Length: 259
Image 1 (tube, rainbow, N blue to C red):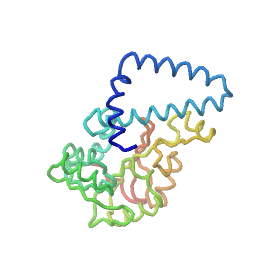
Image 2 (cartoon, one colour):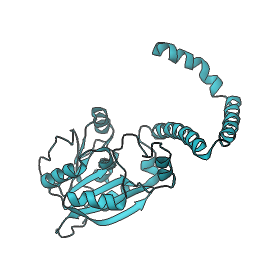
Image 3 (tube, rainbow, N blue to C red):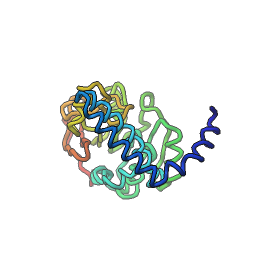
Image 4 (cartoon, rainbow, N blue to C red):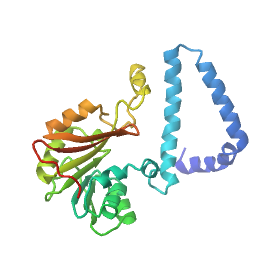
């Protein structure tokens, strides 16, 4: 079956599936299914219910991007940019590693009045960032962090939801710190202790990371350890929205705060 055939079929079926009657029917069917599944052994019932929850959450995640015109609604709702903006001073040079579509890099350039370079390996993300977030003192570079070295020093390195996607994280951190020589590194990673269902999923043999592309998710101790391997120590740590946000500084260095 070709994609065109599938699209034509969906165009015919969509009005049926989108109707209020279909929604009520599906809701009733799901309630009955969940009730029936719940009479299985608890571990098997939980596996089935959690798999359905994953399917629904995946669709919710996609729609949260559509809701705000290509920018995930979490940027607006959690206001996590504030942590980074508050820790960057006007005129400072910032390297945003894994900048994605450029949402945070733009805020750092506009709200913190910093000079920002964002790098990302995905050419479509970089293209989106350049088109959507053009601003003075803001540039986007397509680059692979595994092979790219900073061309000069930076006052601040930002890694927001990046480390968990990487292999050889300590080695990458060491290279970035050596090349960029930042006074501080601002980090945001998912917490492995964000919810009681995380260890439950692991116990049941189900995926337990918040994103299937993650290489790891963090406890505070793990984050401290990986940063120490790169010659960094945590100066400030915040845990909110199931994530860890940290200000890390080079070992032995004086604390340089945002001016």
